[in-house]
Amino acid sequence: MGEEGLERSRWRGVAVGAAVGDALGMPLEFGLASHPRALIRTMLPGRLPAGHFTDDTELALAVATTLVERGYLDPDDLAQRFAAWYSSEPPDVGIHTQAVLSRLITGEPWDTAAEAVWRERPESAGNGALMRSWPVALAYWRDANALREASITQCRITHRHPECVAACVFLNAMLGSFIRGADLEQALETAFALASPLPEGLAYAIRLAPRRRREELRNTGWVRHTLETAIWSLFNSHSFAEALIQAVNLGADADTAGAVTGALAGALYGVEAIPEEWRLNLRGEYPLKSGRNWGWQDFVALADRLATLYMQP
Ligand SMILES: [Mg+2]
Image (cartoon, rainbow, N blue to C red):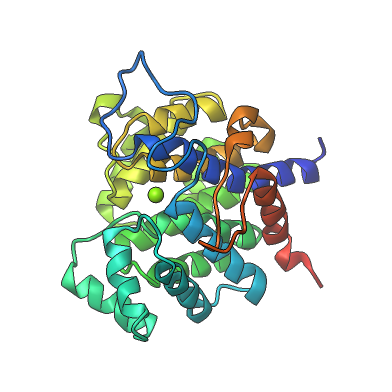
């Protein structure tokens, strides 16, 4: 495969990997960590049918749709899409996201809504913006500064905490770096540079993540824990499948850990490395109640569209 083919394989891996990871983690969400000798390796049914993606991917598809239709990260348009998703009665929605979106549907502007919710709960640094941020990396992977700005804007529509914002820049910088051909160490250093200055606690967690012991990982909905799990999983595995199996079997916020780890591992190993059985099982609907069903090939087409948006004359 030539360099262009490799880039294509990696950007496709981001979209398919994120959705597959979400679906793989879905039945394990809120559970305890699996026994290390009894790891789940197949897509099981949970509160949704086997292979079904969740709110993580639905909201990522809202981000992707605004990028494709507007041609850039338009926060007003994206906030409306989040509000429309919330109005379509999603089966699951995070606490912080719900607090912001319930204000948006009354007509409150997104910037005052997000600010007000942050003031109400200044300690809240959930992973709700991180889980949906990968489409921004696909649209801006060629331009580090544009990637940084759009990643910040995407996050701040709902999540104002500096740790949430920095985590979104960090993840997207790693994804962009992988697409351009970096290895794991290089991508990590590129991300440290682009997301600088990182909040101290987050920087510390990321630096320690590769050497953590499995029993130390909590994998909660705290954005710091999600990034920690994803980086630990990548450093302690040698394939897409093994990275994902490590991440989702930590239980707790397994679907979001799966989505974030899946985006990264998909970018690192390429779409062909994603097990066929997982790809073929992938399913979900977006917009909700629209009858528009998404399979893995739809994520491939979406990734191609996003990753070449800014190449057009
Ligand atoms: Mg979810």
